[in-house]
Image (cartoon, rainbow, N blue to C red):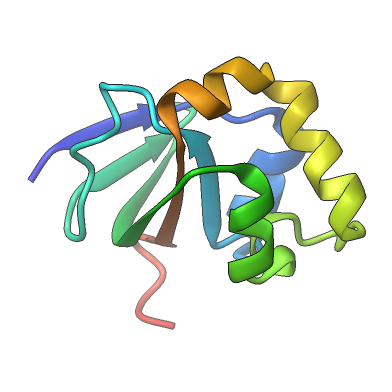
Length: 113
């Protein structure tokens, strides 16, 4: 089991804390490519979580087609707005070079949901 430290913008951290955000999507950087079920994540050095599943995708567009947008962005933007959010966070060349991960997780210390 590995432990990953991931950092989120404040608004997304609040969504994780509330339990509404259950899928974290990231560019599949080499240091994240080995992430698997059972690994741990610590968000912003505050919130521990367990990885339930990791899916690899080629693009953010593919992630948004196959994963529930409301579990990625609980404020439920449209498909195009969600895609634009990703492209505001990551340059397209990184998406195309590394691919994308959809990381399903549960917060630890709250009991199973």
